[in-house]
Amino acid sequence: MLFLARFILKGQSQAALVAATMAVLGLILPPAAWISAAAIVLITLVHDPKSGLFTMAIASLGAAMFAFLIFATPQIAAMFVLLAWLPAWMSATILRQTVSLAFSLQILAMVSLLAVILLYMMFPNFGEFWREPLDQMVTQLAQQSNDFSLADLKQTEDWVIKFLPGLFVSSIMFGAVVSLLLGRWWQAVYYNPGGFAKEFQSLNLGKISALVAMTIILIAALVGNVFTVALASVVSVLYAMQALSLLHAVIRIRQVHTAWLMVIYLIMFFMPHLVVLLILASFADPWLDVRQRIAKSV
Image (cartoon, rainbow, N blue to C red):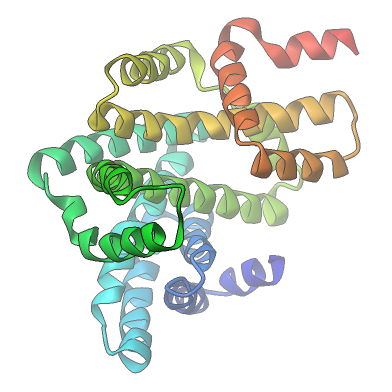
């Protein structure tokens, strides 16, 4: 993907073109939306926040035109500005001003937690928009399977609908984090080779953040209502990044072949419980300093 970064850095018009085309492609292939926002991140980091905003404005016009020609719905451009580009631009702006990846992610998590609270307060029936397609899926599944009754599936559907605001916000947050990291990596490749690896592998969200996150997850586990689970999903995204940082750091310190990273990622895909264990390790890291302990044992 470095050829894209090279093209983006040629100018704001080129960056806007990448952002717009990838945004529209993201409607079919969701990861393309992360690349779209990463173009905004790269321009913001390399130049300044105003340049990022100007690129967003041009890209919005381009995305609206493409969306109108392909889907006859130019409103898609506004959707991407609000849901994909703005969170990524905000995070990139904070990162540029503070040069702290941890602080940028913490602010993004705080904004996401606030978004969850506001969604549940202002739009309590947010999930009902997806009731009809979910009803169709549940009915088909009940007809095709003897393992689940329609009543049980309906109960699960009701829970999912109530949880959708949390899933919605945590998904947007995850995309913003991926876009921020991708844009930061692109920047490092051209202006600070090797800098991104050091920055990401040393990521430490600190004791206060860990205590707040553990409190939210503990409350969600004890109370068990959908709202607390939605809040827990947001902090889980944050500490999944901390866990991956710790994993990459351990691989480097132990001087294990990087191919093992791919193996571990595949294992995590088929065994999600491993992700939970890594997140638990990331909670303990601010006190145990896992990286330093492993470095001393090498």
